[in-house]
Length: 298
Image (tube, rainbow, N blue to C red):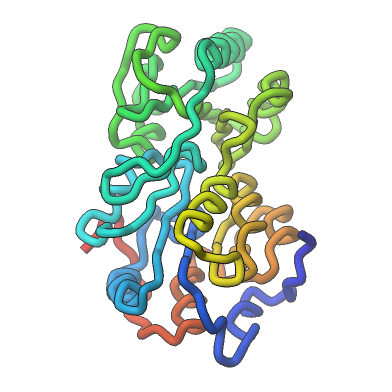
């Protein structure tokens, strides 16, 4: 849907004097959206979550991060929370899988071979095979592992990524250069049958064609009886596009990719300006606590 947003990042706060009347579900991307550039969750989110729970509003992180990472970040505040993990390929609530969309046999191995080929040609890349139980890598240098740890707290180093014994839901590729200019075009051959999504400056995710955050969100809406008009969504990058389409209250962050700004209906302040929390607090008239951040939950 074409964006109807104003050019002002505070347009969201001015959209309605009273805000939406019946929001029941708030979904937010993590990196570049809820988290600031230091990867911190705003301190004020924790009391806001308690108030949302009191009002019967479900809060759902939707991220390319693995479920174990998201659960750790929200430990202590995650009761009843729905985690849309791995770009929508794995949806979990209270430790119970609600839905998943695993890759077909042999797909992960073909992707691993393609990434190895890129590396042999001098591209500084590494693959992460994402299973339900863990993430798996075969590259062992500290520079690569430091990036993996940010998003995959549960990961294992293996000698051969083509022989992982787990149900694989996604293959992520980290490019130390530009994922959009280098890795994504190199993996374009997989796009005929799969999603090849640039999920960050350095990351490309490959999933089933049926898998994305929007598909996961629509499934959740159906299961819970929640409409797009009752849904508020925040995102900043290309892997957020489909979930923006699933909500009437869709917000691009002021720091978002230009295509995300075009696709969203409204704009929110940037991730470094506490944009998600400020917008939610203003429109839903929630108490606004401190604006600083923390990497962990309460």
